[in-house]
Image (cartoon, rainbow, N blue to C red; front, side, top):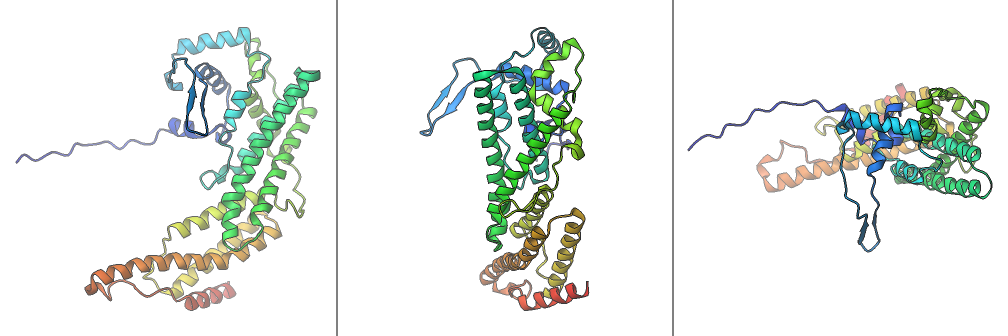
Length: 371
C-alpha cells in the first residue's frame, strides 16, 4: 500500500480588494473619481433580467459579459475616460443605477456598525439628486423627475426603517420591550429625513461644495454618487448632522440612540445564539460575570450620550436577557444529560444539573450593589 502524501499549502491573507467589493455602495468608505470612472465603465455591461412571481424569467437576448474591475485593460479604461471627457454622461438621470445602489440599504446585525453611514449615504444621494433635478429641469419634466426621486427615496428609507425595526426592534420586543420596534422604525424614518434636510440646506448655502474646474472632468458633476460622496466629505459630520432629534411619542430615538441600540442588541444576540460561558464554573461566578457586563454597558451608554428613554429600555431588557442566557446554558446542559443517558459511566464527570438561577441572581445583585 502506497502512502498518500498530503500536499503542502500556503495560507493566503484575505484580499482587501475583494472584501471591499463585497460591500454595497451604501457601506463603502469612499467613492473616488477612479471609482466613478470604473462604475460608469461597468454600466456598459448591464443586462435586463427579471424573475416573476411564478419563477419564470425574462432575460435580455444580449450576450452576457462578466468582467471584474481589476481585469479592465488600462487602454480600454483610458479610452473610456476620454469619451466621458468629450461627451459627458448626458442629461438623463440613471435611475436604474440609483435603484441598484439602494438595493442593499437594509439594516441587520451584519452591518449595524455602519448604520449611520448608510443613513448618510441615502440622505446625501437624495439631496444631490433633488438639487440636480431642480437645477436641470423645469415644468412637467421637473415634476415627473421629482416624483420619481421621492418614490425611490421613500422605498429605500422604509426598507432601512423596516429592517432595523425587524432585526433590532424585534430583538428587544422578544426581551419584553413592547413597542420598541415601532418606536425604532419611526425614529429611523425621522433620522433619515432630518439628514436629507440637513444636506439639502447645506447645498443651498454652499453651492460650490465641490469644485471641478478641469474641463476633462465635468462629467463627474453628472455622477450623483460621486457628488453625494463629495457632499458628505464637504459638509462633514458637524455641519450636516442635524440637531439632536427631539424626543416625541412617535420618534423618540436619535442617531446616537439607534447606533448604540443596534450594536448592543447584536452583542446580546450573539451571546444567546452561542453562549460561551463555561457551565463548569460556579453559578455565583456567572452572576458576577453578568454584573460586570451590566456595569460595562452602563458605562458605555453614558459615554455614548444616549437618551434616558433608551437607557431605561436597555436597563429593563437586561433581566430578561439573563433569563434567556440561562435558558441557552440549560440547553447545553440538556445535551450533557442526553450524553449521560447513553453512557451512564460518564455520570459525575460532566454537568447535568441546571443553572441555579437563585444563586445567579443573588450574586448578580450583590455585585451590582457594591459597584
